[in-house]
Image 1 (cartoon, helix red, strand yellow):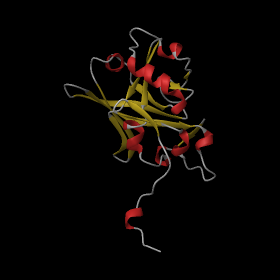
Image 2 (cartoon, helix red, strand yellow):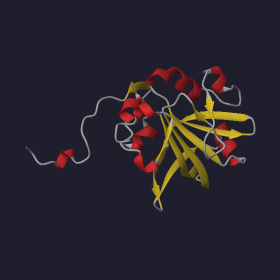
Image 3 (cartoon, helix red, strand yellow):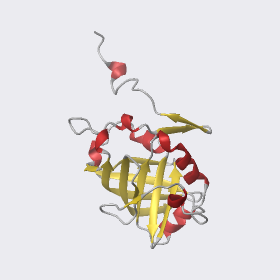
Image 4 (cartoon, rainbow, N blue to C red):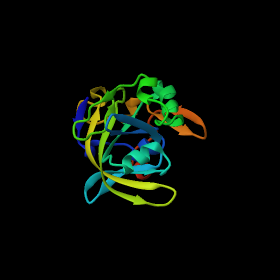
Length: 193
């Protein structure tokens, strides 16, 4: 894994959360818990890379964050981990150790307390800076502290090729592997040859 700048993440970062089956992991004492998420965004606030996640207060992970955890990681597992992603999303950390049950490896983060998932080709370390209670969900605004990517995903110029990570997309109860590139920004207004 190599640390890269958050500014080097290219492609549709919105899809990384909504369709990429992101896994949010927290640590409180000896408790490590992960959950799948699809409500959130990666972007910039005040010229700083940020992650904003929305969690239901009833979720165990949300309760751990509200009870003293000040950080979380976002990990993105590829298509060969469909079973693990499904398990993490369907079971509560109150009842099971998801890392143990799915043979996943917690990986020490470089700048925060919460571990990443060693099997993930992309891990984002986030430090919570604000929590806003919205009723049905709590909004966690976090500063991106570090981004670690598998070196196999970097091209010869150091650009992250997220399309090579074989991330999953979820739609109406089905998983899809993210596919081939179909265009690039500006293709609709490109001059015809």
